[in-house]
Length: 506
Image: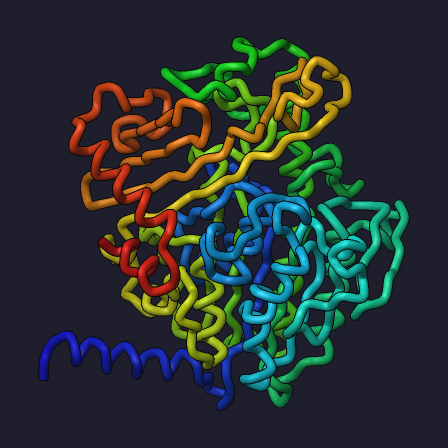
């Protein structure tokens, strides 16, 4: 028998073992998704309990990236397993495809939650879904995305108080009482309530908790409001400097940053970590409840974020939306049946890999139009033996947005700019639209990004020599290298399904 055939049969057998637990049924799946949680700035550091109970009991992935550094496009990729150019949610607005009628009819109907009922799963969702969810043009609170049995969806973007939830299609308004309204804790209580109704004889379940932390307005729970008071934001790498030969949006940032901007950065840094402590409590209690109910041994637990964040990198005060690693690198921790504890793995994995992984775990066949790669083959590999051929290339896309009028910056009216604050430094614009191809081989690691602006500005980084992405080498790199990346980017920007999966491995 050929070696490849033997390997295929072996993997299928392992997969069957992973999908059928000692209790004789398919595994439960718990997915915790945070908002704007970085890795580069130490965003995982406050998650002590989560690391102990999830990462240390399974796998911590060092190289988890998102394919768009913005909430709704990234979340849409998580749910569909597709690159932005294939699911069409280009930014956070309904006009940009976020939770639009078109998205609901062409993408939501085949997203990973729709596979649950086919496989006999009970499904639970609580928290932020998509940024425009629940707004009237997106169907209002009456619209419950297909596939969810228990639906507790936040209307609009992340907040901690004064919000509306869709409870299975009915509006529920919340105020500003910590005991009843703090959103992370409300998600926490809803999740525990769901688990209390499950036992070993219940149907398998998929449970997703999508927290507002650590997104703005960065409101910590009262008991954590003084934690980390002696800390400041990291000053290393690209903090408070421009670097060499950056695109114009970086160049317009003020360097060095004013003192009040830096003070604000430090305050935001502390509060972001403080909000995550409530998430850490939630993960601890969910894992403990799974254990108490005798369900933990048959449950996969995934922990990740929708995008990263920056605080002063390249003198940009605070936001995401850039193609640098601080905005696209996010956490991923996984534990579950058949997953060996204590692993730290270096394969490049993406947000688009979550949907095919969940679909396969429930026993469904992954649709042909999915762009991501299932992680199941990595979950069963030997401890600390990473496979550098799992993925060698990936795509990052962003469509810039603008605002007609920008409060406190009247000079930018109708200038194609947005997210302007802190002495009118702007974090996005219509021509902050770009696509990147990132290549990671055994000994090389490059990032090639092309802007869709009047000059098609290009940035190229050798991430082995320059991990902070300070020096754009487009003018000094070999022409053959630039030509190769340009061709790769052109192909990946138009790929679909099977072709995307193939290009990521070549």
